[in-house]
Image 1 (cartoon, rainbow, N blue to C red):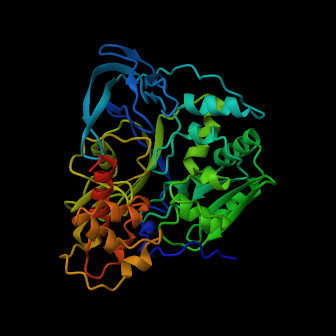
Image 2: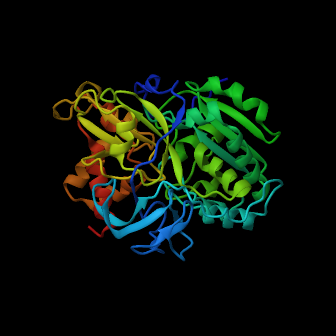
Image 3: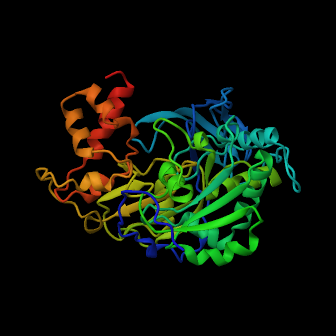
Length: 431
């Protein structure tokens, strides 16, 4: 039985055929790695200085604040500088640059438990120590979720991977789901949770056969109709449980925690082997790429090096995006490094983008029907243009998840989400 899921949403061409059958390849190492110091929660401060020798897995930046995850070096080598570097957002942030010595001299694993279960307090401690954040793109520190004081009865593993082109989570499920299953088992026992649900879209239901034999009695698979943005927490929770997260609320308010496939797999590696997050799987796709791939990439690797290992470009890309095409960030430099949250790198052609000229709004309400949050994107964009901030707030502008459904569905090729994003930023900064 398929579950129809949430209201609104869209059905874009998923383009997953480019990489769906591409096994995960370990990317070779490059000479220099750049570690941005803000990769989940509040920023960190460097714990190393120029000239320091570092080991793979060593903490190179951290913060005493709970809402923060430490940064670990993914290679051994020498700190070249502590400086400012370009981020995927297009601005600059503090960074540590390390010259790789190719020796792979590793830090000793931190405290870990190869078998058995750990307490809630110990799981929180190890998850923070490993620098685990939401690997699906949100980057929220995972130990903060685990530390909720709300009563949780359900854990949902977000395996929907609803963004077009991206297949990194799918490949984990296909090739090595055991870490994910173990991570789920650790979480539900540590938190005393009754059930865990692995949420798959029906374009990935072929991996059910891989997962089902590994499931424990408290774990279940739920197959959902493929629809974007199924991976957004509020939409996924409603599709799986029928519960509605209140405006301004969190999943924990309705008794649910949501973790990405790679995030919960990282928890298993932290608890069982004392291994921090130093690498992640990145889908490289788009018609401009010579060899679409799924790579296991060290954090800090320049985008340029990743594309080189995918054979480079067969034609000049019209746009390069970090993440998926709907919610990812357009890039103007390939010197930007891979972060813990870099799920994909796309090099798209004009044909894929389907770039058109923006026309006048024809008041068709396509954006309203498509909005998964039940908002009126047209109204919100007009209120922002008028700087009518009070009405914009009353009409729910801060509830917009910036999924891009409104822009995708607009027959006039307008982009309300861009205007709404500016409005949200203005409101956060006191206008």
